[in-house]
Length: 299
Image (tube, rainbow, N blue to C red; front, side):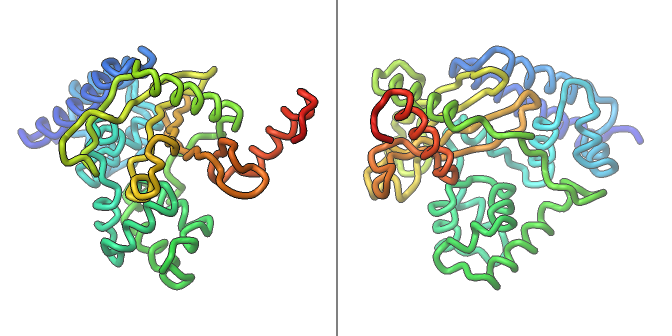
């Protein structure tokens, strides 16, 4: 099948988005390898002899992954663009990401529940919302009981099934998680550099009527892991005056597959006053206990 003008245009639009991410990463001081990877992927898509959509429709994410210089993470990003017309990572780097609006696109999720889901779960993608539905975290959202969680789970699975058309396997996810010590070290680097004002800043679209570039962004690396860190720009963070305390850390493996964690200063319990990775409190407690034992201080 020969590519139509629309096919060529869509390929070029996707390539342009990949190049924009590369440019933003470069401008924001990310590791050159990350920027280069997206640029090479853009060249692959721009030079394809057939529509990238045809490859995706026939073979799913695996077919995209098999293309030169793509890989699992970028393949999932291209699938996200083809299905939704959006790309969360690009919007995040631009400062235009609006997870509440994204979640409202799911049938059965209105403005109030979309807001509560984002604020409670600290997630900003449909895939992360689906993961929360699968592991039981969704039921912690006020107003979302067992029946509603089951309905959301089914709806999200149906919406995302085109990303996994053959075996319905989950979307690519990092094969492992960075140690909490590494996440806390990235958090420390981010807050230190943000305080000194040396980090590039973006102007988030949400809760920023003046369009001020106030949100510092850090791109850094630890071993084989790449990280992007930003202060949490959520309604609750603003309401509780935690916009310079809560830090969202996105991490990427060698294949550019993304995961995320939120790190906060604990306000209750045995870790009060300590920096804690939400969802991994037990590991944080063990880490601080080990540090206390080594230093001779009480854990």
